[in-house]
Length: 267
DNA sequence: ACATTGACCTGAGAGC
DNA sequence: TGCTCTCAGGTCAATG
Image (cartoon, rainbow, N blue to C red; front, side):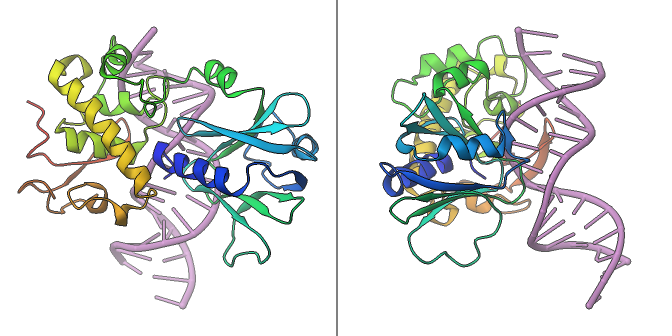
């Protein structure tokens, strides 16, 4: 599900396939996904613009459109969204295309979204969007250090899992990578934030950064992730890839949660 | 202010 | 076979 690493991969994909190209036309069929903009005015804004750069914040991908008033295309991928680019022959099985951009040089870019939880919109810039939606800092850049994490967790009383997934605390972690980080940091998902030791916070920070970077290197593909990770074994009853425990499924704040009760202890 | 829960959506898979 | 039910998980609104 598109979380920070997946969206980072989408960003790098758009960078290498579409940046610098000019829009000839676009087809928008995303009535449900559109936020703050009509299909008509989105198509109008895109027309003739050049895709100049991209920026990612959390699970949001922003694409800068130059050649007019400052506007950025914002893509959010929900659970099932993705992007795909092609030149001549349209790929097979290209279902659920909600928006397609046709470039002057014959290339195409499609935004797909099966379950329609995604969002497409136009914004004045990434910073104003982040501020308006009260998104927390993105944990990907180098300057996201342990102190920053500690500061973001201050004052929180709930379970660590729901807190890490709260986009106004940190922007980018979803259900799957949060489970992965807690699994590797050996922290029980229901542990209350105030009950976390200083060491645990440091470990969470270190593991978080390593997991995100490794996931991007693996292109977000679970099959390419290390064997000792939870992700490929994220199923009830599986043997824990780190110890002799058994992976257990539970619910935390309404979200299905997988963890190893043997090395992620509550008490 | 913060935490929790349910609704939204669509397709896959389970169970009968 | 085919129907119905449950589940997945991103956000947001409503409620506690």
